[in-house]
Image (cartoon, rainbow, N blue to C red; front, side, top):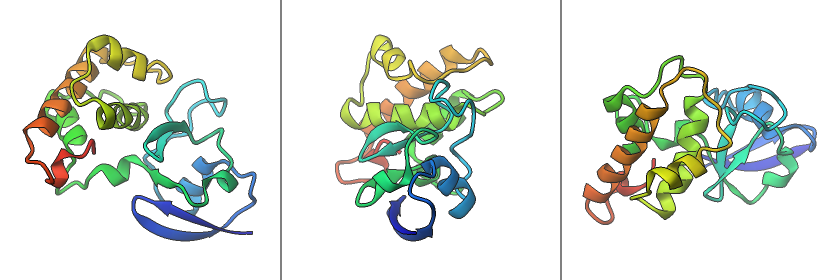
Length: 165
């Protein structure tokens, strides 16, 4: 069945079973491999993407529910040449260790920073509650999210860098 998706600002037509998890369509049909398969049960957060600005566990979300919605993956936050503020902050602070959970963490942080560019540590921790990480870089992740908020606030109004990407 043909399903229309808006991913990272681009329209796509995919031929998929409507019950297929969004994660599989992103990875297998659109070659967007940032969102990771972790547990397949919605318990680890490595598959997190933003849908209409809110974090969603893509391993548990049927693609049929995504028509007409705006999907953002970690690839939509910036590029290697021009990383978005969140990506730049994670690079500056060296917040990633193995990196497997980082795309999901970034997408949860993206949703938080879009509504609150100066969150407290408690707000950051609450936003990341569904994202598991075993590497032990939690303090660097918190610092990176705070830094991303600073970068967003320093950007001029209307500047694309002001976005939570």
